[in-house]
Image (cartoon, rainbow, N blue to C red; front, side, top):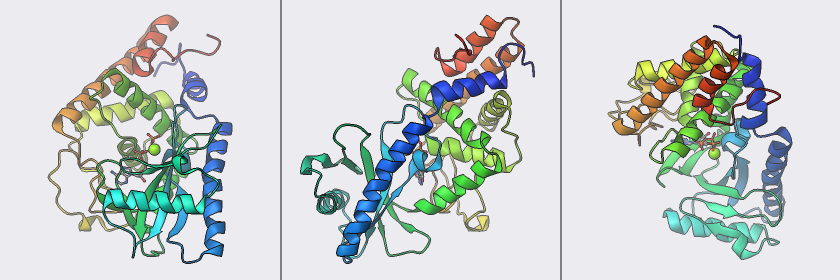
Length: 324
Ligand SMILES: Nc1ncnc2c1ncn2[C@@H]1O[C@H](COP(=O)(O)OP(=O)(O)OP(=O)(O)O)[C@@H](O)[C@H]1O
Ligand SMILES: [Mg+2]
């Protein structure tokens, strides 16, 4: 591929300045979540029967795939399941009430139940922490019933195993896998800003990239890695089932009839793409085709200005070369 006007290094520069959450911010937010975890630990020392057992960082901050535009800190709170309510709104009130008990220096209005989670707001600096409940029974691998943030249903999951799955791919191509995840998420975020009906969940993007990574696609050249992703989405039309064999035998995967089938790597009964309709898929495929065409044109364009113009079709006007 021609690299005359915009090179892999230009994409690295763009990622570092516009896409990635800067590492000092990431550290600060992780420390904020850790402080909540530590507070809960010390409360538990004094009150061993307390039903909130552990607070764990989850989502993109834990997987190191967060974007600069991150606007809340995702954590999961493991709740001993026996006596906790199983009705979502009652469970959220229960969680909020106990968080207020464990963190007495937060005023009650700093701990608020939302639709499927409880928000803890810090005064002054920092982001809000979004606490998602997981009912569990001391499972050693961290399996429990999480309140799905997609539709409020209970979903069997394990935060530590999801992080371990992501971290295996991340380590297999360090630092490129996580960087390409962030670049594609940045593209998807822009598509969402342009069209309120566009949906493409970060977790699905990550699973598609994990599949390509497992198949041996080299992520070290970002224009090429992005082109692989867009070509896969367009060619497959997301009609192919995506699954992994890290945590279960693929023979155990049942028959799904949903339009998109991306099976959760730690729970063979959960289709991560179940809420996606053929209308959603058509928009994703169309956007992927456009992005792929723009990258092709960028790689063939005769001048620097035209090359930048095509990359801006993918990433928007914030795409600039160093020194501009
Ligand atoms: N449909 C799902 N099934 C199972 N687990 C899910 C599902 N959706 C999200 N998760 C869990 O929630 C975590 C966060 O998912 P999400 O799609 O918000 O991605 P993210 O990495 O936090 O990205 P973003 O930066 O966009 O918030 C995932 O890593 C996964 O553990
Ligand atoms: Mg998230």
